[in-house]
View 1: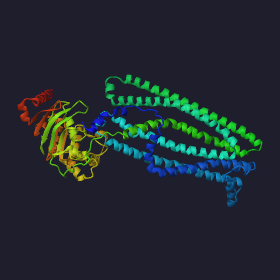
View 2: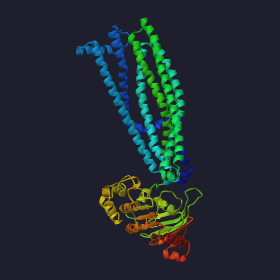
View 3: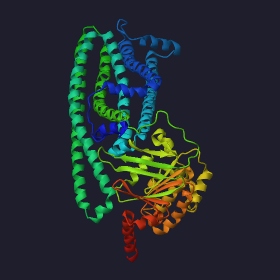
View 4: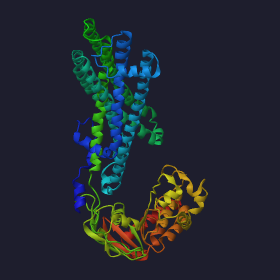
Length: 628
């Protein structure tokens, strides 16, 4: 085993299967998240500056009402000893500029401040959202790129759905977290500005109001602890609902054939009822919390009126100042409510961040050479497997001391029972796994001295299950290779007898293929696979059960395509069909990971060994089909 493979074995892949809920606040994780925010920090600072400016205007709006309108105009006693933050002078300046009355000028000033305040707040929110979206776009880009380069050994042990969750749901949770940070910035800046203004007006009244803050904080903390448990149960029940729904819809044919509709409905209804009960519990808690907070606001308002009203009667404070305090109560309560709302978001995001960084920190990879050998523009195509021993798990070898030389341009068929190591041999040739015991040579160059991507450029693989990507027929043949022109795609399609059916499609080569190519037959998808390989023009061709799912009539057309793409190429054929095997130059027989026989069809039949037995078994199967 290589160092990389030994390391991969030591890694605990089960962490990708574990659900992480409600992790404690982790400043280190938050700091790592901001690594992606930092390149867009200038835009974020502009957004925060806009929030500060809008918050200042939001605080000055009630000052206009309280000090200018109530104290200055209605009461007619705007005591200059009480701070008005320049609003009275600004109103007087507007009176002199426009010739309008004081009340009209104050209303105009209030309207302008309101318009500017909401406009700046809007720009702040849009700018902040742009900063967050750009940051998470970069994170998702890095995460996807990282997971693309994990080896096959990683995906053998980890469910693809778990990886998808990290790229989609977990990144979305971070979006909610960062947007929540922006909301808190917009709420707490007015809080501190208002607090400073209130201290400058009346210290005693401000302290009375501050007494309520710890009560709000403690109640919010206990409430969020309760809702945190409830929302965890809700998430689990939603996951169960989705899983149950997916199982039933994807297996609907089996459900209906087995008459399980009523039973499955009862199971689904039970899970659905649990989800409803948990959602109702959460709603009751939210309503109770909202009612408590509203009552606490009213109590705080009553305290301000009681204490402040006494001060007004005694002439220690103006009426406008008391009213100003009552309007500032909302600015005190909103940040606490916002913080409570972000509490559960924060803990969910911490769990998502941990999952994301688990993936980003996953170091498992295929070993690459430090100084890779540069391959010539065109290879001869000679292959050699020398004393190759390999196992996916320690102590469980799949291949045992395999040795074989494949000449340039030779067609070698590999046959053997299921589990004999046929596909493993091909995976090692494609450098999807590291191997230590034994060697593979490509044109007498050790495969471990060649960059894995360079190897894969020289190998064309056609699998039994041809993968269709979203896009057009042309896209699925080119696979994004800029060196392949449209004319070369058409020439490749004509070479494998795919051109006729492609041109019969509604938009020809520009026809969009639906999910997994369901608007094509199995044979048509296989011809596209051959066209894909022929357009790439590799020196080595691998056919891994490429015609196993094709009917006999379609196979005749595919056999012609096979002859075309195998011309001038070293070909390795893993197949069960007699015709494909018999046309090979030599046949390699694997059993239990060992080379049992090698030779031509005639030679191996005369030997009457493993190949002879496999051949006879398949011949009997074919005879039974014909008689049936």
